[in-house]
Image (cartoon, rainbow, N blue to C red; front, side, top):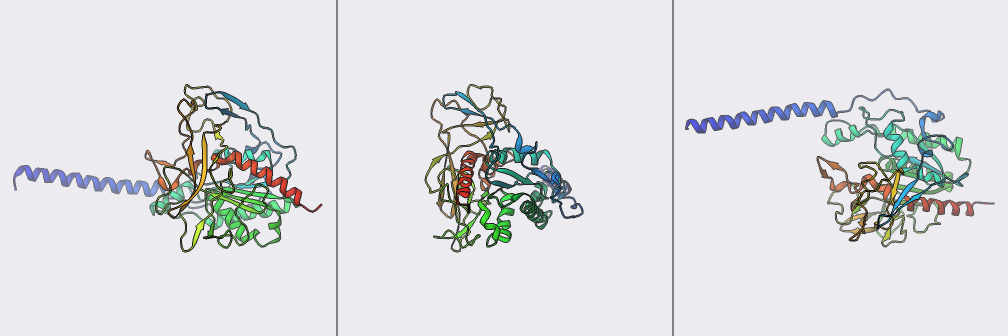
Length: 399
């Protein structure tokens, strides 16, 4: 072996050893930085304590903040849309928020953090214009626990603890606040998963089901046998097919039209074995393509003047882009999802892409779709639907 080759081999081995050492160090770093800390001591959450609610009617909280929006037309014209709330909405809404906790433990503290307050504001507060808003805190599985579970270095959190909080909050709501009123259940992601279980175990087939106006499980799934509308996750609750339908379900996961769910996707894949997923487009309950009434927070991920070209200063907390975004439920290739398209034409002054992908190391994760903006994409349509459902529920109530 020549001295040159020997030196090259030594250099390569040294480099490999350094790489192994670096990987070991990074493994220790990841293990200690991402593995959740032990959960705090469990106690039964007291939802008779108003501090354990994110939103309650008549209170100065996230659901009472300013909801004004700026409508941006294709020609760049801006219109201020002032929002007022009904003085006495006829029904209630009960909301469970998605995974947002940055706590270091596997389950979150029962504390109102900025992340929880903000997600309730952008996802749920607008519903408070047509229903009384109720949103409990709960000890959800944290972001750290989800990452650790995905890496195989820690538990995915105590799901029973999270569900127990939601169930206890629901029982308190019924006992203290409901007083026979109709109620819409609204959730996203982890919140939808917990609400689906709540319906299965605590609502469907029980007397309280008569008060269920609808259940909106956004960014999650409801399974049904192929060709049927019940008999899967729910025994009697059907997908919503008309605005005045009562006691029905809305469920969808959104993906770009040019980026459908991949094989084994986290969202949007049919279960198989004779089962498929429900997809209900709030803007077209009977199917087909429809323009969506979307509402996006103005300053998330961008400045207030990044919505138009050339830039216009937008000062409202929300923007809406009439005619720009459309959606259609698609059942194809073992996938069921809400397919999202943008309709910008040459000369359109609005941004060409509203974002919504889950980005890791600069790349969009294809199996998440537009999970971040599942609610924002159809929020105006969902609020209109709740208004129509509420009117139908009141009209059908015994006089």
